[in-house]
Amino acid sequence: MNITVSETARLFLKRKEGFYLSQNRKAKLIEVAKTCHGAEFRVVFETPSRDDKRFETDGCEIYVAPRLVEEYGGFSLDTQSFFFAPRLLVSPERQNYSCDCKAKCNNQPVNQELRASDKEDK
Image (cartoon, rainbow, N blue to C red; front, side, top):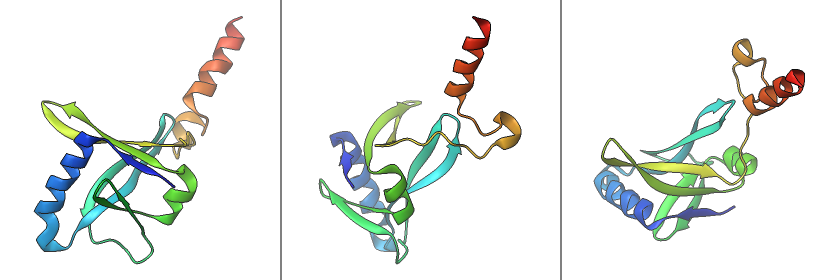
């Protein structure tokens, strides 16, 4: 398992770490949604659970649930501008396109549905 952190993401995380230091809250990578476009992740600052795996990269301490480590392999963290403010962008090494929206898409990834409709048009 590998976590890579860009320089801008490292500076962002270090600034947040300093803010939450007195509360003993650590950076934790969590999965917030599984969609047809892939899983979405965020980094939150909270007290890690006993089962979380600890990773240290570029001077940043990040905790990840073991299930996420197994399912997605590793992660890369970078920043992006969002309305003139930086926010973290988390990308997994292996993406998962299975979603939990059976009523909306019959649990098939969007890209497969598009390929099937393209074949029907020919």
